Image (cartoon, rainbow, N blue to C red; front, side, top):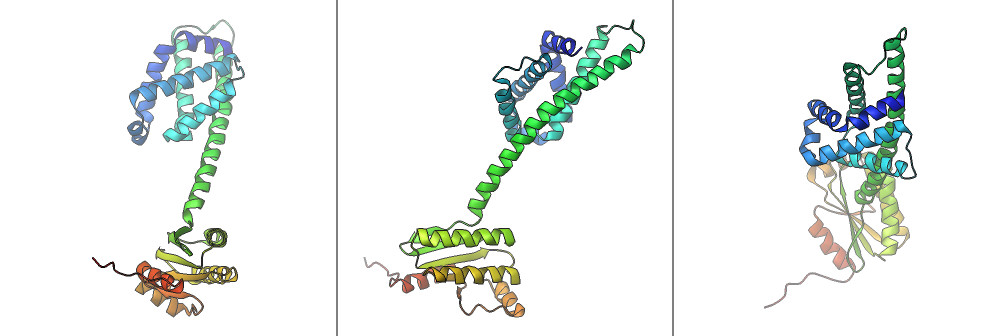
Length: 279
């Protein structure tokens, strides 16, 4: 019975594809259609259809898994949700079933033939769900893992500005996991860049509470052990007031209100200064 479904799809590919695309456009998130051209949408749908046929017919040559992985990566990158993909499977399956029934391709001589056919139909859909959804899930996990790694690298970068002077700009909320990453990057970076002074810029950090201050103090103590002086810059008035109200001691950390003042201090600490060039 599965082969009957696949042969029907293969024979009526263009008609089914056209009807399927129209039905799915009505269900699609407008954002999906906005970033997907008509040509790309049709090519992707056709590729999906070919994979369905190959899966049902059992024509899984050595390249089938690779093609399936490539397709899954494509739809993930296009922003097609798993709900849209599974909905597409369901819609396509019902379309095939309805068209075959409309054309009288199901035998009704057997008792309870409709129930038997529908049983095969549901098994057919289930087999497609398992293959496609698993591939989608694997691709999504890989994509999320890559993005997470990239975000971690960007969340606490250490930038060498001058010889012996580095800057770590921090933006956004600092939680425990990110604080550990800041500590690791800070220690590795100051040693790698042979930094004498490192400026930790918290201008873009919205809230500095006891936990954040504690991690900053820990980071400052850690870099001091490897011969580098930490400086906390970008302390806004409201942040300063919060630190005082919480009773947080920053005696061992040099602080400034702006990056400019911090850089001037850092240059002075490395026996340099900013001078105006005479014309």
